[in-house]
Length: 264
Image (cartoon, rainbow, N blue to C red; front, side):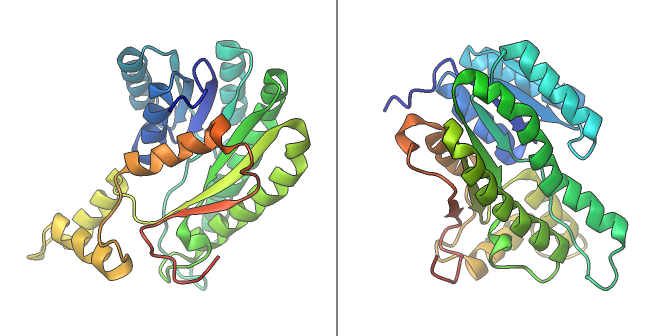
């Protein structure tokens, strides 16, 4: 199926690893040019060069911490210089947390608010003018199943991802008149390097292996009984970016192997 994406341009935050990198490769396979940003400048530059070579597209890596206002401004400037206009923005940067509400300080709340919410606000404000130049565009925000079905050990993550879902809905209503579609994706268990790192920490000095731990988590939470590969999730992003999804506006999509226990 031709998704009509060849020659378009995309900006992806958190684009050097995990979900963001998988989305980058899925879009590149469709002929989309890319600007990837991530905190590790060396890694994001290396991955951008690899993707460009492998898929014969233009790919730029920018070292940026999206909790920092000036870094976001530099991403926007780099996108303008690289492409002149932007068709796709994937607000994907984020990470899990672990705390209690009663013990977490204001600084921790502020950090995750800036990472999960304000980064999406600021990148959208910066990139939307470049979408207007293109005549329209797509914004996808990576939230989490935890925005609807919270996990008890990460209340700040739950709260900020829920706020991101509402931001997406409000932004979708604001921009659809300009042919800019905004949607949210709420992933469930996606086997990213972060999950393997966490599993390694939790199984250290135990008889349980990392794979055994992850298998138990998947069977406990998901009817499908396994984690998804990032590539399985990424192809759904690519579909939502395409002309095959032009009536998808202001919605939240769960890709969670049946984990969500309520009816949406």
